[in-house]
Length: 115
Length: 113
Image (cartoon, rainbow over all chains, first blue to last red; front, side, top):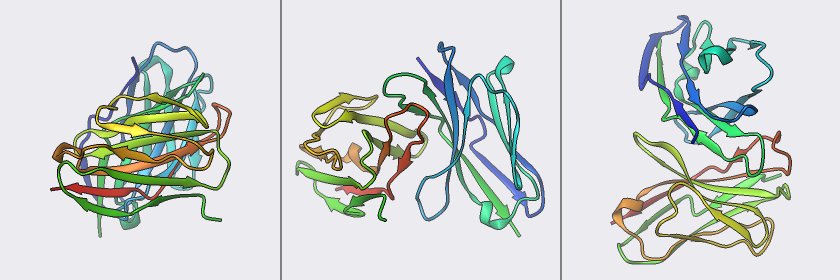
């Protein structure tokens, strides 16, 4: 069975601070996908990134970066120079690479960025 | 270019009533999913579908029924609503390939009194 753990329930930072959201996963599959979704206060779920299990390159997109480490089964997400608009709940998710490829979500981390 | 829509966006009903939540996507995606979001649980999969007339149970299917007579629609029915089904319900869809991203609808907030 697959499992995603986001140990940080809530994080509060002041604007311009860097913040890292942790994600640890469990799976028996050798090939799988990892995702991050953002849920702002308006409620919709916004796709941020997908990583393949065979691609351990870190990725940077503007102020966002992702650190995928297969050895520790982690897929952490860092926001550099956080902004108030980054305030949201962030979900890490895992899917198998075959069949329905359903998503298994972590419980989410609420990030509050104050001015 | 609506993408994926859900209706109603908000619904209040009473215990024991039947409720149907609608989901419609315009991408002709093969796969569709229903999740519920509850505080402390994240999102949990209720049902999913690979194509018209092909559906399967997810993690929390009890009390729910789905159908998929057309590719673009995937309604979720609560046959006899209970208070424990008060939640936010998200529909999602994905293309045929496992590498395709799953996109979500705006959600339906359901309250069962």
